[in-house]
Length: 194
Image (cartoon, rainbow, N blue to C red; front, side, top):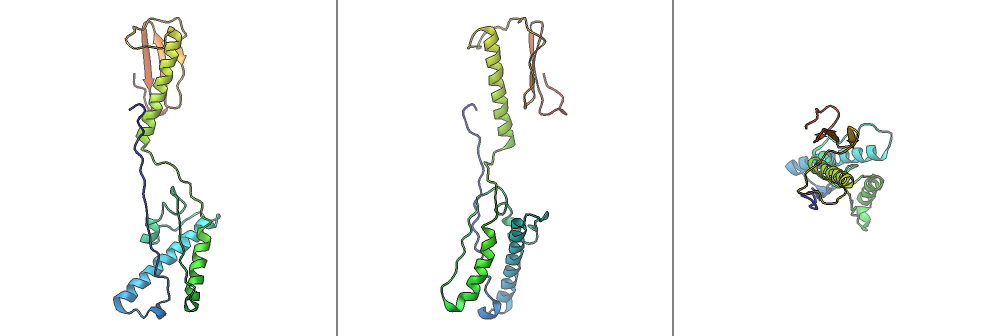
């Protein structure tokens, strides 16, 4: 695994937020009117989430108010890069819808996301362990006077009982007579394995 990068995860959401036009102008009836009402309710919930994210004083972000806002939870203030494209029409009869779209999109540009690389925590921990082992080998090589430790028998060294103290991963080395003991622990609550 040395030199091999851990797999990373990514997600791409493409969402068309069409449906904010006035229902009286669409002439929709029956099932189509019912669907348009639900779409507009989801868009209203999305507007509430955007407003809450832009307003820094809000503690609660209402991202569970609709399916749309739950799906876009990572894209809104989460761990992603987000691009919102607002489509407006230059036609005079669409002026009201265009203005509504711009009012909707304007606060969205102020949302600040914190994108970072998605890695499996186990892979990160494994890489930290590998770095700790590399440091330990360097310390041993320094005290044994060689850079190659493969196939060498360890001799007792005139050192204090604690050669090396635990790092952030929780690795410790101890010399007891002619034996080298290594302890590994994930955190202070774990019992060490020798």
